Length: 329
Ligand code: SAM
Ligand code: SF4
Image (cartoon, rainbow, N blue to C red; front, side, top):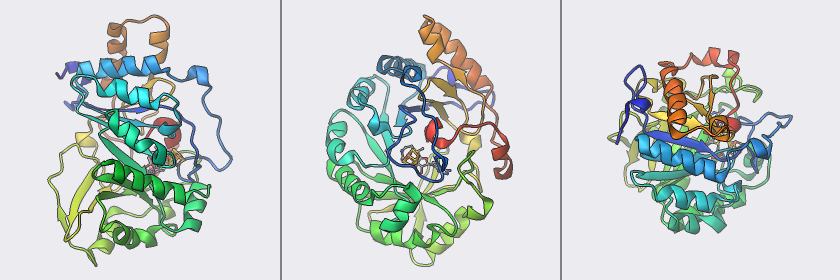
């Protein structure tokens, strides 16, 4: 069922919800967290598991058919298996997915699949141990690779691999990633580096989609897939390989016109656009005893305030936005 509440002023229907379970993480990726560390949200300010499940049910009733659990690092949430069970049993939810750095997947992937998780996206920015440690500020590449193996072994297919491509940092590994993925059921998603406050973003580090694609097509034959208009990534099949390749072109070719995504932060704010600093609390409505109708009013107002598109890349740092770790990617 779709409802008008999730349709914005530009007739975009929002059927995809990303819920951040925590702003904590067991890595400290340079592009996501400030070098000097950050103040994490106090536990009592985070949504509780019943609040997360209540919001999930409400949004699915309004027409959401895809939920992604994210963070911070969502596998650090002690109730993750129960949250997956609770959400996956909702009538009308077709996809329940997780974005993770995979460190904990060796012990969790099979269990999460059993509980109804339908897809996994894993971040991996380098295949070189030293470089992985520099980017993630933690020496954990072996666990991350073991987590990817566990996800494949559990039967997630394709396992999506997110690579944030940064000039003079890891852009020289684009073809290495294709060679690594060639015989695996993976979708390697090369993501343009996006500006968020206090993460040292510098335009010189930006590496555009067109150059990524050129580099790949000098060696591999890519065929465009039939992408849904709202898809975040432009997807391609690769000749003679089970691997897919996608490009997330948020900066050079923004896909705002077909955006169908909403976010709930770990502290319970609804955020209608990744780059919009305007948010509305759903947590406080619930804690003040608000009804589902009260929540729907707030959700409707957030949708109506959603801008048509985000500002150009050079203006995004002027906004008072959160960093990705506190939004939920
Ligand atoms: N911890 C999980 C992980 O790393 O997959 C989930 C949360 S993380 C914030 C979600 C996604 O956001 C990751 O794939 C990460 O690479 C991406 N991300 C974070 N900061 C980014 C930035 N500045 N530019 C592009 N992607 C970014
Ligand atoms: Fe943690 Fe994911 Fe951010 Fe890296 S990208 S610091 S793994 S939340």
